Image 1 (tube, helix red, strand yellow):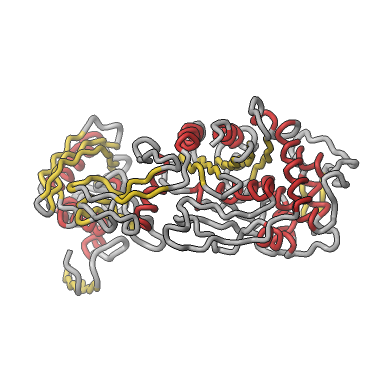
Image 2 (image 1 turned 180 degrees about the horizontal axis):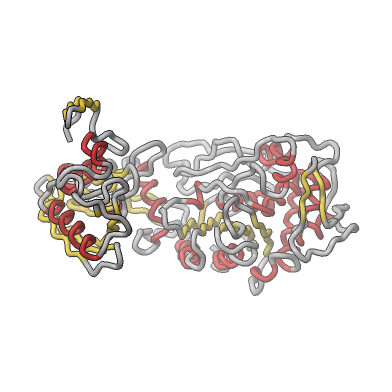
Length: 545
C-alpha cells in the first residue's frame, strides 16, 4: 500500500486524504456510495431485507474471484468496509507472500458461506503449502441496498482480529523448546491452552535461550498492549533454545482437561513453598490469558484477606465473635447473604467464614482501628498485591485493592466494588495464607534474566494458622465441602461468587490447597463458587503437582 497524499475529484466534490488506508480511514468512493464503494457503483434498484440466496452466491463468488487473483481493491469493493478490507487483502499477498490461492466455498447456511483456502507461502527461497477454513456473511448495504460481504478480519484468516495482519519473514525471535520442571517438552499441540503463555515466553526469552530465528508466517498483533506474534506456518525452522519453566506436566494436563467443562474459565496452580507456577490453563474463545491477566471481582474468596485484616488489627479472631444477621447496612447500602442462609447472632469468625456470611464481614469493617485504607494495606503489605511489581516471566496482573470510602469500602470486604483479581492472584493469596510467607509466583526462574521478584512482609504465624484452619473447615464442613469431597491429605478452600453488571449469572470463584499445591479458578458460567470453579480446582489439586 502506498502512503502519502491522495486527491480525488468525484462528481464535483474535492477531497484529500492524508496517510495510508486503514481501519477507519476515509474512502471517497465509500462516502459517496454509502457502503463498500467501487466496482458496480450503486445498484439501479435499491433492495431491502436480508440478501437472497442468489445474492449471497453472486456476491461471495465475485469476492472470492477477486481475492484469488490478488485484486485487493476489487475484492474490497464487494465488502461493507472497503478501506479496511483492501489493506488486509493487500497484506495477504504483499506482506504474507501468499500466492496460488484457491478458495472452495461450501454450502451456504442462509447468508453465511463457509469456505476452504488452499495456497502457497513463499519467502527467501522457501515455500510451504497453507490450508485453513473460514467463513463470511453477506449483508445488505445500509444505504445502497447492495449485497455485500460483512467485513471482519477473520474473513481473511480465522485467527485474525482487529488491528491484526499477516506477515511472512524472519521470525522476530528464535523459537524455544519450553520444558516443564521434569524436562518434558511443552507444546501447543499437547497443551493447547498454554499457547498464549508459550508465545509470550518465546517473545521474551527466545534470544536469551540461545536459539536462532527461522522463517515463519505469523499473525502480527498491533496496537497498545499487543500480544506477541502468533506463528501459523514454518517455512524454515530456526534453532530452538531450551527454556525450562516451572510447569508440572501432570498438573497442566489436569488443568487443561478441567477448564474444558466450563466456557470462559481459567485456573492457576502454584507451589506455596516456592511460588513456582505449576499449571495455567484457559478455556476462552478470545485466546486471552485470563488466568494471569484477568481483572475481575473475586467475590467471597476475598474474605481470606479481609479475615486476615480483622485478625491482624485485633478486631476479632477465628474463635471470636462475627455475628451473621440477615442484612447489614453500610452508609445507606444494604448487604444480604446467599438465599436460605440462616442468621446466627452468636457466630464466630470461623463459622461465618466457612458459611461465607457477607453480613458478618460488613458489620465488622466499621470497628476501630480499621480505616478506609486498612484492607489495601493488608493486601499490599501482607499478600504482596496491588503494587504492580510482580515479575512472573510473562505479563501478569498484580491485583487491585484500592483504598475507598462509602459503599465500596464495604463491598470490597466481600470481593465486590472496586477490588479486582486474577486466578493467579488468588492462588498466591491462598499460598500466603497457609504458609504465612508471600512468595511471588513465577513461571521462569529469575536466575535466567536476573530479575528481582516482588517482596512483602507476609503474615504473623498466628494469623496464618487461623486462616489455614478456617480454610480447612470450609473444605470439610462449609461451602467448599461438596467440591473438595474425596480429596485426601491436608486440604482447605474458600468459595466465592461475584455479580457482574449485565450478566445473568454471577462469576464463579474458588481457591483451595492440598498439601503443597494451591490453586484458584474463575469461570463466567456457574454462579456459586462451589458449583463450577470448585470442581476445576479440585481436579488440579487431585494431581498433587
